[in-house]
Amino acid sequence: QVQLMESGGGLVQTGGSLRLSCRASGSISGNSAMSWYRQGSGQGRELVASMASGGSTTYADSVRGRFAISRDNAENTVYLQMDSLKPEDTGVYYCKILFWDDRYVTYWGQGTQVTVSS
Image 1 (cartoon, helix red, strand yellow):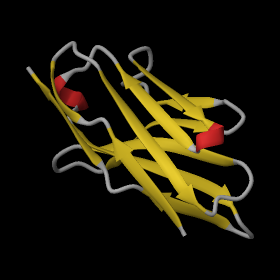
Image 2 (cartoon, helix red, strand yellow; image 1 turned 30 degrees about the vertical axis):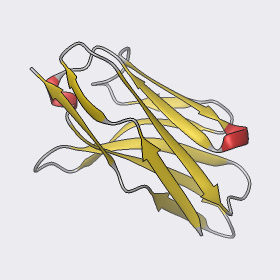
Image 3 (spheres, rainbow, N blue to C red; image 1 turned 60 degrees about the vertical axis):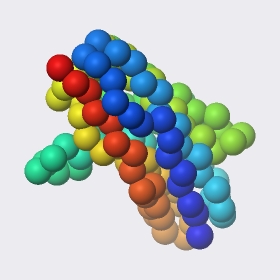
C-alpha cells in the first residue's frame, strides 16, 4: 500500500506563487512517474505536470513557463512550483504516482485546494 501526502495549497492573489509538495510512502518498486493533476469546479481532472524518475517532464500548455515540477527521488517527493498564478488555476490539486509492480499501479493523494483571487 502507498500513501500520498500533499501540502502547500492555499489562497493567493493573481500573480502570486505557491509551492505544492507531495510525499509518497509505502511499497514503491522501481522507477515511477509522479504527477500533478487539478480539477476545477464542475470540470474534469486534468494533467498539470508530470515527471519521470529519470527527469523527463510534461506540462499542460496552460501552465508551461509558469509552473515547474521537480522531485527528490530519495524522498519519493514531488514538488510543484506555481508562479504567476491566475484565477483559472483555481482548483483541487491532486498528486499521483505510477509505477510497475507486475502491473501498472496508480495511487492518488487526497488533494489540496488552490484558490487564486482576482
